[in-house]
Length: 325
Image (cartoon, rainbow, N blue to C red):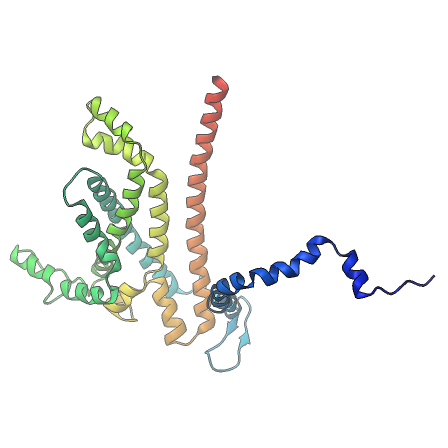
């Protein structure tokens, strides 16, 4: 029995209403799709493609001009035994430790003070946030002058106090401390604004009840403010860690591509920059970038686990309370 050939009219009659509406919907909403398309096009060109290409490059030996040579995991194997890379990792974590703990403590104290009823509160908020939007290149030059071994303002102050000058930019510890001070100066106000937003979400009734009970300012700060800001503190810790692992502008402008004396200021990103854009070893530079991504991801996972554990404990406590009632 022969099968009758379907005509265009027959196919139209057998199509569902949803099928008939789909072309109409595309025609109807094409201006909206066209309006949002630049974002996705730019993301594909300047976001997704570089990410995928860097993965491909990490398995290649390429100087940017000649033919690529596939080397497999050789770049990662060399990275694990590269003393300069591990020196950069150590420098980065020391600078992070010297900067993050004081920075977050000062930011929390500043946010707590700004949360009080003080005059010119708006002015202080702008003043503390201003360093974050200041050109880091210009400020690195300023800090280089302030911490100069011979004519720096810090050593001039030490001389006036009859204290021996400190070679800030020619010793390993001095370089790390100088970079850490720059990070503290730049991001303390930024984190203070984040903490201030968290403080404003805490019910004022808790503070009023504590004051009625005669609690001191320090007791209120340690027993109410800090515990209730724990999720915000964890957020600032992980963002500050990622920012600390990505340090580049401060050591590069302050010390140059060499990282200063004994490469004491050589961070992971600065070392990656040198390998990729100074030595033109793009394959090894890509491998360093993905090693940095893995390290940063580990900290993100730790943060997620800590927040998830806290939320899970809260849910379990609520369930027990509801079951007991």
